[in-house]
Length: 116
Length: 145
Image (cartoon, rainbow over all chains, first blue to last red; front, side, top):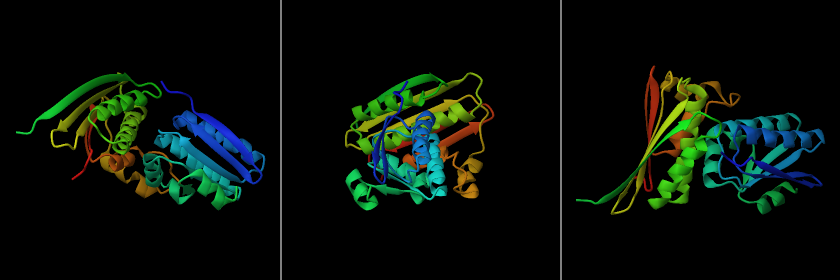
């Protein structure tokens, strides 16, 4: 029915950027979680999720993103997001994700603020 | 008298993973034909996705089908609207309990946000639910008065 979510990782000296492409549903959320947990196991404590090529999310996928944020927070790290569509941004606000993670308009402003 | 262009579409969808995307795409195509903006279409499609997921995940329907109907209306003065009905033949649910669940349980409980998302993204939502099934009637306007 849908293209499988693709996640691309760009390792940086201070952390990593995860680029998502496709639908963040339960399967897509788990794919992001797997990549994020691999990075956490490698002691990465600063992650930026760039969602510029994701146009659709659902509440199950977002609940998995919140779990990732909580696990990173437990390890003393931080997850941020950038390049959200207006409706995804609104959905993040509704579900409270925005209370636990910084959201940037674009990657440039995120990289500058996070020194990533 | 105001002339209107009305377009209708009906779908019967199996309850399989990601089937919500089929309903969302159909509604999006209809909305684009009516001249609705991308932002309004995106909000509507995300609400439809949550409604279909709720039907699939929680209705317990024996026929394992989601019945979807769209009616698009485009008045000659502008401000098109889309009415969406999402129906399942499941066991129904307690609407007030579903609406207050998140406020009661707090942020630690991450699942069950579907109804809140639907009501935030649509302009009107009406829920009819009995032991024989549930219908969500949702309306999206290009310009909400």
